[in-house]
Length: 515
Image 1: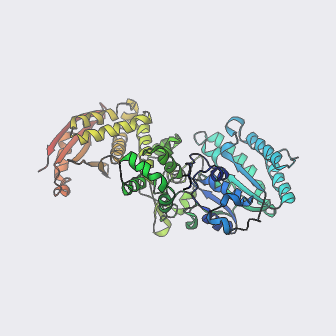
Image 2: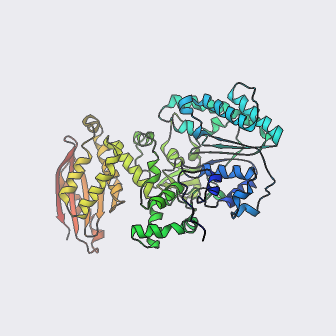
Image 3: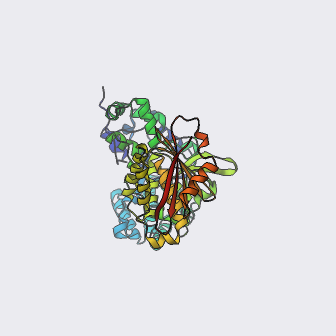
């Protein structure tokens, strides 16, 4: 029996995977289709989603390293005599944070040219890039150009717009040489997280074929359900024993936590980084978010009053609306992986939503922290404590926790935006609670009602602001909020809560059994 491959957490080098007995999920059939398609390509995918591994695999193919593809789909489907020189440039590892972008590119070009045995005479990065491509093609044949994470110098500075704009101009200058490089190029692929500034940065590359929403490449990166069940079968028994669950239960939880990403509205894939980390740790955690969430995102969502972004609609043109000085929430959330396509609708519209529990939970935690002016690490414990209080039928503790949610908000901010803060924060907290206990939150003309279901009780809750608990209770009764749960055998508890904007806390509440 062959040795079970090790899990390649954080490793995106195809050759290393294949020579060090590391797990590789075979994507070469999709790559073969790409190689046989005409044109130059652009692919947008979120971070940690296999873009770098895709380019590394392409590099090995064009370098003719057939031995690395033994047993893979493409092994006997490709002419391995088609060898081409490769320029492989990754913007995630060129040191632009310390050197500055222009100096970092110049240094990288110098290292690459020395490695390839090309002497560069030009002095500026655009001319050096052009010279490297041209001389390499003249000596060794048409060049394969692979550019990974092209937008990293922009993504990293979206909270520093002047620097982002400076980097944007450097990148525009650098890429400008590609418009005249066609005679020297065999294949070109550029990857990144986002499509913003694509028009201005690649202004002369309007012939780039965008694969981002192309259904033929919806599973080029990420793991399909079939791939998960096939390639990770050897790792499942150990996790099942550790978790004390059956394989069907494990697969259901994996779908809930890590599946759901889609770029065509039909094909669903898992986040590779999260799956690899899960099978290594054996625990359900927010692995992807542990790699870092841009702080500007929750701030942007709050500033544009777009806190509830699940089940929203966007037209196809909206996916490419990127102005670094006027960022729009939905395109940014989609490109960075916080939202995904749930369905293609009529008239060119798409329905977007959180892909899975991992992303939803972490984003809600960040948003709650942003609204509370508190640390993100406190959001989840607060919601878990709220879940425990409901599960224990301890409404005194529930009220205590609801009060605590507002304590860290500076009074002058809350007083200024009391209505907005009150509704938004309660809404976020109870949506987050829904990941632990079934919780329904509905809004209509500013009214918020909430239903929390535990194994033993159903709580029908109405919140009021600067009114009274009695008014909240009366509204529950007048509008028959509990009626639809009458046939449920669990006891129903009606809860009216009034919140004071002056004291920034719950000042009155009451409960009553529903009969």
